[in-house]
Length: 219
Image 1 (cartoon, rainbow, N blue to C red):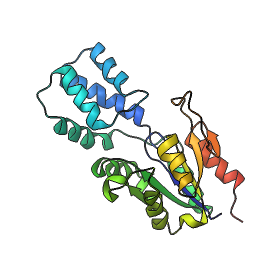
Image 2 (cartoon, rainbow, N blue to C red):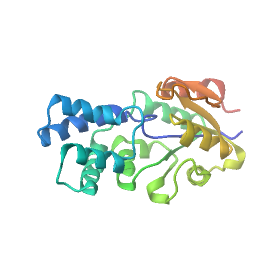
Image 3 (cartoon, rainbow, N blue to C red):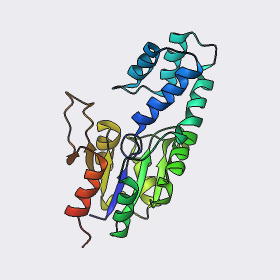
Image 4 (tube, rainbow, N blue to C red):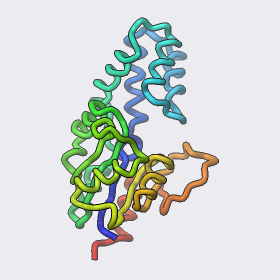
C-alpha cells in the first residue's frame, strides 16, 4: 500500500462544534435573542448536523426573520472561516507525516467559499499536498471521484490504496472503502446504534496520526 492518507475537514481536523457555538452567540446577540433561543440554536445543530440550507430555513421560520435564507447562509459562510481552529496537534502532526514520507490530502464536502476559507485561514492548505472540495468539483463524498481528485493532487492514485480519516461513517468511511482506501473512523459518540466497518477506530484525529506514524512506518 502506498503512503497516502486523506482527511475529512469538519469535526476531523477542525473543531467545527466550538466554532458553531461562537457563531451562534454572535447571531443571538445580533438578533437580540435570549439564552433559551441560543440553546435552541445549538440544539438544532447537535447530533444530526442538518444541511445549512435546511438549518437556516428552520431558523428563519422559528424566529420569523425577514432576512432571506440565502443571505443568512452566506453570512454564516463568510464568518465561519474566521472562527474555526484546528484541533490541538493537527498542523504539526500532518507536517510530521509528510516529513516521514506520507502524501497527505484533505477531502471535504461543503460550499467552496466556506471550505476554502477554512483551509486557508487555519493554515491547513499550506501543510498538505492537496485537497478536494465538493463545492469546487461539483461532486460530493461518498462519490469515489472526489477521493480520486484529492489523491491525484497529492501525486498518488486510488489504485495503490491508502487511508482515509473521518468522522462520518457514510461519506468518509464507506465512501473511502468503496474507492479502495482503508478507513479510520473518528468516533465522537454521535453514531450510537450504527454498525460500522471501519478498519480502525480512534477517539480523535491525533490518535489516527499516531496510529499511522507508529504502525505504518515507510519501508
